[in-house]
Image (cartoon, rainbow, N blue to C red; front, side, top):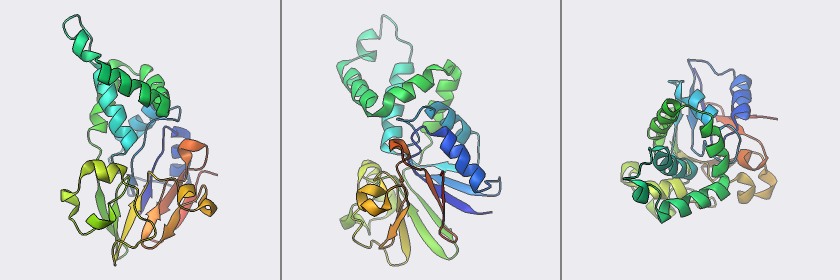
Length: 234
């Protein structure tokens, strides 16, 4: 089987299905999704559901996934007279408004269509998202994170990194982090690294940046690390 990596799907379930068809994704292959599965696009719940049913899809935690998980957990708990004051406190409500403005409303809308049991199952699945993965294929090593690693912490072991930093850091794409390892990231749309890379995977200096802008009306990209083949939705 082959290995594939993609990131920042942002509720674009149809794009995800197109890419899986494009690569001929089979049970023998493995797919790593580097976070921000939810928000902005219309079908976050459906996308999470599909991914959760595939044993060979490995999700990593993005900042949108972490925020959605935190807020939806609290919104999905039953609100009673006893816990009313604590269930919907000011902190949660202000976080909810911020999230709704940042693409969360689309996720809320897709979750409303799910039964309570389905919602619980999807939230349990979000709890399984890993902060990082490492992959070795074709004699090459790849470190996968949603955001990045601060350059001055590049020698610090992955299991000692700050999870919030792995999720939120924007790496220094001008600097090579490792000699024989690629740093693979999402989070930062490639158009923001280099305007000429709009809607394309960006590779240089030992970096592979995967967020092609599917959450902003651009394409979803997918990379096969074995041979660096690139696949796109259109």
